Amino acid sequence: MTAVVESARETHISAARDPLPFILAGAAFVVLFAHPTQLLVRDWFTDSEAGHGLLLAPLAAWLAWRSGVATERTPNVRLGTTLLVGAVLLRYVAGLAAELFTLRLSIVIALAGLVVFGWGTSQLRRWWLPFVLLTLSIPLPVLVTNALALPLQFRASAMGAALLEWRRVPVHLSGNVIQLPGRQLFVTEACSGLRSLTALLSLGVLIGGLWLRSPWARALLIMLAIPVAIVVNAIRVFLTGFLVYFVSPALGEGFMHLTEGWLLFVTAFAILGGVAWAIDSLERRAARASIHAAHAA
Image (cartoon, rainbow, N blue to C red):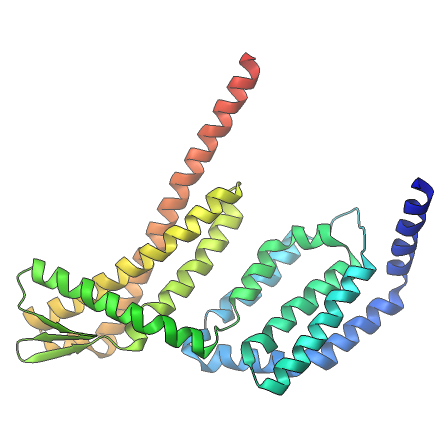
């Protein structure tokens, strides 16, 4: 039985060492996925909701290069071929249905298949962070963004109006419209916070993957990124209404409004970094406590 297993393993390795299958697979990837890749890159440059891909994709490539390839390689030709075939089928079906998210997701699956084909599942686990970042760089389907944007608009409007009332500003809330004396504030889809939520989730994944050690700590950081994004966006709505009411209506639009959004996003990023630092401190204390307990035993 051991000899059979070793023989199968040697067959996998020898097949993977032959460069011809890998070259053919890479060439097929370029031919089949050139168009979806072109569409994805175009959206990174033209769609403001997908602009974070311009940062995440190169960062994913750099992280993969920094991690390098493991010295011990155990190529899995069968699993790699299965992933590649599945990616090709998904790309074909998504192309027929004109469903862009699935079409672009097939690129990531095909890349995973190439990695498994050439280096094995251990290399895929080694590159888990680049692959997650690359997946996050794919814009969400319009159906999903539309379903998320409206509840986020209402939540930001309600929280912003509550903060304005707390500061004794006379307001009347109607859906996503905040009525001020002589002025209306519309919390539009662009101000729903979905864009900052997507960016903060991506940053949470990046910080957790680079800084934190345990999966539970990374999951906690990512989950905390959601309320941070919602609260910061509500504060943005509050500040806009406050400045419009007490200073000038011009502060609710244009350059000042955009600058305010960027400053608050930087604040949200700093908060997320502080949370990551606190979780990292807890992890270090727990590790030291376990070491002391092991020495005491």
